[in-house]
Structure formats: C-alpha cells, structure tokens
Amino acid sequence: MFNHMKIRLLLGLSIIGFIGFVVIAIFSTFYGADEGFITTCLSIIMYIVVPFIFFYHYYRKEPFSLKQVVFFSRSAQWVLPICAIVVVAISFSLSTFWLTLFTIEPILPILVDLLMEEVPFPTNPFYLFFEILVISVLAPIVEEFFFRGVILHRIMLKTSMWGGILISSLLFGILHSDIIGAFFFGVIACLLYLRTGNLLLPIMMHILNNTIAVVLSFVPTDWLESVLILSKEDITGKAFPISIMLVVSTLLTIFITVKLGKGLASMREGHLAHPPEQ
Image 1: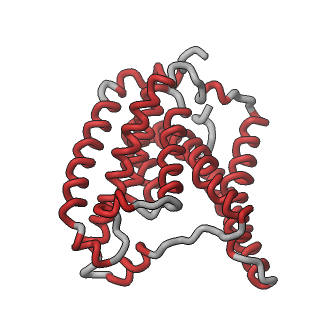
Image 2: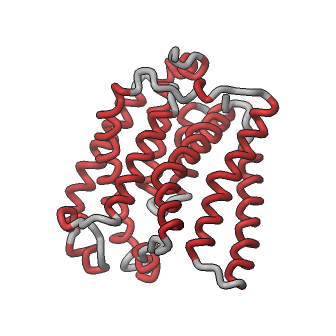
Image 3: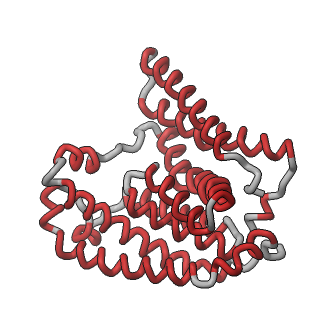
C-alpha cells in the first residue's frame, strides 16, 4: 500500500498547507481572531486537508483498502504489552527531557526557559474540544500513517530495514519538542508495526500516550511531583529520583527494542507482503 507513495509529494503538500496556514494566520490576526481559531486552522490543514489530498490522490490512481494495514485480528493480545510500553515511554520521555534541560542549562539558560514554557489550552470550549481531539486521536492516526506508513516504507526501499526505522524515527523526533524520547518512541512504533504488519497497534500506542499526556494536563499531579520539572530549581533539586527513572526506563527501552527487533529482518518481507487474515 505504501511502497508507491512518494515522500516528496507529502512534503510538497505539507509546505503548501503551511504556507496557506501562514496566509490565514496573517489575515486572522489582522481582523482580531483569537489564538484558538488560528491553532484550529493549522490542525485542520495539517491533520485533515493534507492527509485527505495525499491519500485520495493515490487511491484514485490505484484503489486500496485500509484492511491491508489496519485490522483487529489478534490485536487484543497486544493491549497489555502496549500499556506497559507506554508507561516506559512516558517515563523515558520525562527523564530524557530532564537530561536535556540539565545538560543545556549551564550553557543556554534562555533555551531552558523556552523549553519549559507551558503552551496553554484554548479557553473557548469548541477550540478546546477540537485541540484535545487532535492531540489524543487525530494526530496519532495521521502521524502513524505518515511516519510508520509512507516515510518508513519509502526509506526502507532506498536503504534497509534499520535505515528506514532509524531515519523515519529521527524525522519523527525532530518534529517533537522531546527529540530523544520521540525518537525512541518512533523506533518502537516501527518495530511493532513491522513485526505484526498491523498499523493499528502503533496507532493504539500513540493514542494512549497522547491521551495520558492530555489527562495529566487537567488533573492533579501531586503523585508525580518527585519526577516532574515544574521550575528551573527542579532541574538540580530532583536530579536523584529522575536519574534513577532515567536508568530504569533506558534499560527497559533497550529491552523492548531488542525484544521487538529480534529475528525481524528474516520475517519482514512475509509480514509486509502478506498481512494476517482478517
């Protein structure tokens, strides 16, 4: 399904979409539109309009079925492992974010302030609902189809299995504020997809990860206070417990990566060419 889809078309549509967003943002600001409206426009363009045009273009040329890469057969057995992976991923992401701040704080304190600046949710109920929907559901689905679908497959065709995994995951990491955590999340998502041939599994993992992040933005997090960086003082003040979390989550991330990647090269072609029966 993904092998004939071109990254350059995806990139071109994304650039055009972003230019369109900039034009809308300029006019919206001039006419006094609030920030929630502008953010919603960006989400609609990048997570609805661009994906629709991209996939419809290829569907019109050669119709395909989503059942080729998204199916429920044997998915239930992965629910608990995915929950465990997400817990490890969140722990690893929190601790590597701390490590990033700890490393750059003596050199670029202004960058630390920028990274720690909270991005507020919209106050308008409609914009708030739409942003939560995008973060929790829409973005995970679209990003998995793009990064674990199109980009992974195209780079694998031009390099190798691990070349596709590492490069697509690096691109995925660069587009997120937590580059290290997002990179390893991308690697695990790639391995999960390639091992099962089922894009639904990394989508489930991504949705769960983002949903937990959204929930934690609205509920009290006193029970996580020892590992959350809420101020610059926490970077050094909470170094010990976060260092322990970093070591444990790193070891578990390596274990998960090795476990999912073991013997994958020899079975890859069979999974991609013949996904499990629906």
